[in-house]
Length: 114
Length: 115
Image (cartoon, rainbow over all chains, first blue to last red; front, top):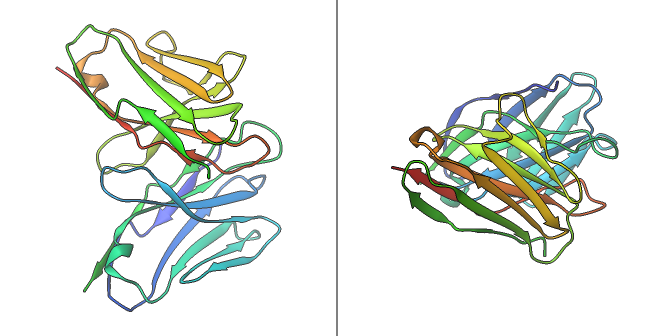
């Protein structure tokens, strides 16, 4: 089955700096890669996703890049703010056919220091 | 759009009792819903895939007779933890996939504490 590795497990940045979280996946058939943000005790919220026919996607301060050959994808947050502090999860799935099950990374706890 | 509700948000029960958790997609139809369990400071662990009109698919190691899943309609899936024990205490989260989409939207979760 699919295996998703996520690094780093914790990340501290100064407010205004950029943060980068990296994930690798094992199943070359995976074609959908969402990123979720989870604040303590709350639900995971989708912040951005990317499909395998696209190499990069951007939404304001958040961007995701995908390298299908190397089987890795990354989340980039620019101009970080204290409210960006949360746990971020990457995930991978095979969409279009099959179960659409998400395989999650272990998460990255991001702390933005004011 | 794409709102998922989950009830109850918190439940405390005695060992041996059964607890039912409801997951509803409020503004979309979802043939497929998912149930996860999350331990403190850990990732989401998929328990089962709930399919409307058919039996749920359970992940390896998840007891189907203990965690009963019913997907009664295109907007409702329920998880019943039968004969709950303290080791079942956890944060249970559901997600729903809008029909025709590949994105999953999560419910707010249910904190189960078994005494």
